[in-house]
Image (cartoon, rainbow, N blue to C red; front, side, top):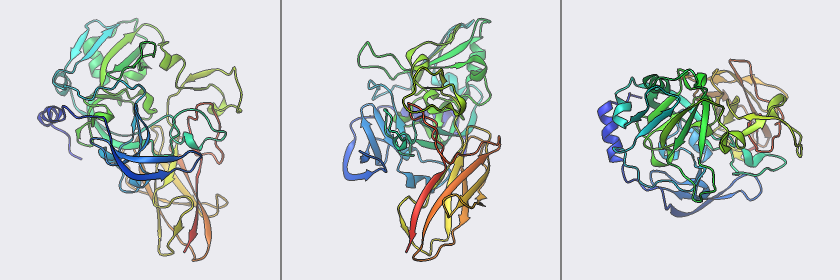
Length: 400
């Protein structure tokens, strides 16, 4: 993909003004996901093709999984949507939008989109995945949005390094964490505003961006227009949308969304026994290695003429070293062929020959290993929030 030029970015931002997030256009179709109460309507929101709706307000929209078989990049109109609070602007005046940079800085800033566009441009391909992706498959069941595995997407993000913005403001010696806030807000004053924070060293990393483009065009409104934070390799709770404030703190952030929400057990494998209480926790952070088949589904009847199994794999930033497939539920394994490597944070496509016989049934299993040695487990650990799912996926198929 070509880099988005400064003039095109600014013009595109103006052209996107007035995009409306709500309401959606209702369709007759629905999808049954593979768990209890898993029926989801397919609705087309503005700038989106029909997606699976967990909730319309705040919008929680899941990508139909067949989309991931179409290429390494997830189209913007098919990209999943996750908001936490219901008060979301339906119109954003990009020309008037500012990002306030305050707190433990030498020079407070108020940055326009033109100010961002004047900084060095950076592009990164990275998977954006909801912390609860696959939560609906948890056993025992847990509270929260009951996602299947489509709460993720892979895009080419264009923007500027957060570090360049922080350097322009100048961090004081007292700086400890950097907090991010967006235009998303609560309906009730008692609801905590959604804010997330990163340690200063993490925030100053090479790959942390303030992005103004997605797959070469301005962000869709529902994915954070006009600018959002990009934290490659980490779950999307940190990828704050409609970014409007950066506050440098002299302490560890203790707001609700850091101190209470989005935390995982501080235990081996970040797992506990169902019903356990009193265990220590830490904020969720880096994504785990995962892989999926994309051209077969569990329970399907497939044609004996289907000769290729295809899929995707990714991890939290070391990149994919190996993908293996099995036709007997994981008893025996063989290597799949890896597709082009478009970046260590990206989906990596893979393929394998599929030699089956008519009238037989098979349990296809897929397992990825990352360059850091991490691999997928045969059984999934459990935590009360249904986070961190990365178990080996199984697909039982019958060959016609």
